[in-house]
Image 1 (tube, rainbow, N blue to C red):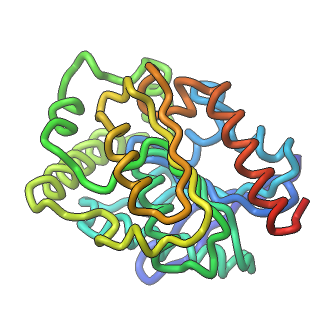
Image 2 (cartoon, rainbow, N blue to C red):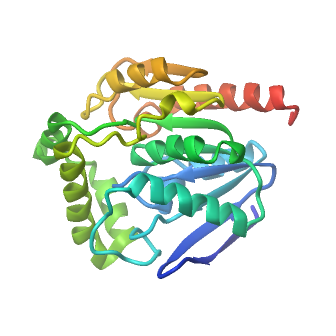
Length: 262
């Protein structure tokens, strides 16, 4: 499988990225407890490899502050909008005009912002366990030791971030707390502006109780399909992988068939 990697130079930082496979491009956006490594690893699910085997080109990058990208001491309040800007800059760098965007957790929220701000660049969105606001209950769930990630995920986090792992985890907590206290709409009250096909997925067993938010977003996004899975946890793709794989495969096939790509 052909794979390339490199760095995109931004104003005062750089982003590490990888691409592999050939076909219609799919941009993967990791969550704020992950990195690009999480999007194609046996400890989670080799999503990137699976997509490449389905004849898609896969693009993934470490968001600013994560993985091999430049570190930052704090995550900014416009985290979701800024990462959408970085994603478009990367697509420009790679000379890719349009993509399907697939995000998990906070990456799903970035994907929605990408479709809002740059509709001409986004053919479709898949958002797994995304949200558009942060609640106190989510912060409490995050702090509960009983909700700690599986050891394999924790080891992967430390492998991806090294010395940055602990301060980055603290920066994420601080960001979520600030977003909750200020009651910030993570999509700037513009979900109704998303006009492309959008697949929203969540589990009823999600520790952050995001199934309700996904139903709400489904009412706001004109062409949204909402899939809520019984049980499971956060996110769908790493807890109910077979169901996620089936829904994703069907959605991509239908979306690209309508476009005339298949």
